[in-house]
Length: 190
Image 1: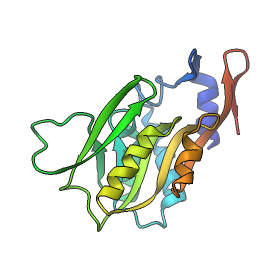
Image 2: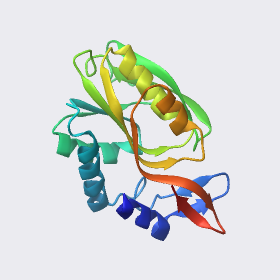
Image 3: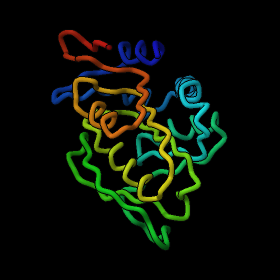
Image 4: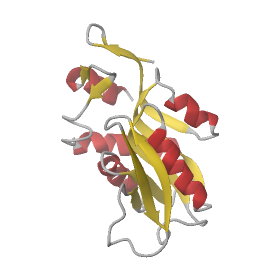
């Protein structure tokens, strides 16, 4: 998606340790007009899949998932990183290692909101090592729901996540695929 690539070139910042900061428009301050275009593109890519639920993980994917869900006319579920008193009853659970935070989380979704009748589209902001998507895939499979695919805004194609998730038989559509990045050369897209 050229619009997202252009925005990354203009406003993205490369930091040490393989970090691409897009927090001025994607995952801290959110450009909702850009999210509208992202949602339209995910609808173009997955609109014929019969999506009944969109699943993401807290927190950065929530805004993108919500705007995307408006185009699919379906609810969004976000996997929580901590069980709260608000979640009563049985839950699906999985472990996810955060690349950004360097921490392992137990993610959970209430069994009330995900089941065998659902056709699920995963949405997230980044795909790097693939742990978040792998955890979400495990939740969908635990629910015996049908996973139709994963839509990510930015895939770091030089990291193993995309290949690993695709190797699990999951359709992954990335709107911007980063081939390489450095402070000297900037971001190079596939």
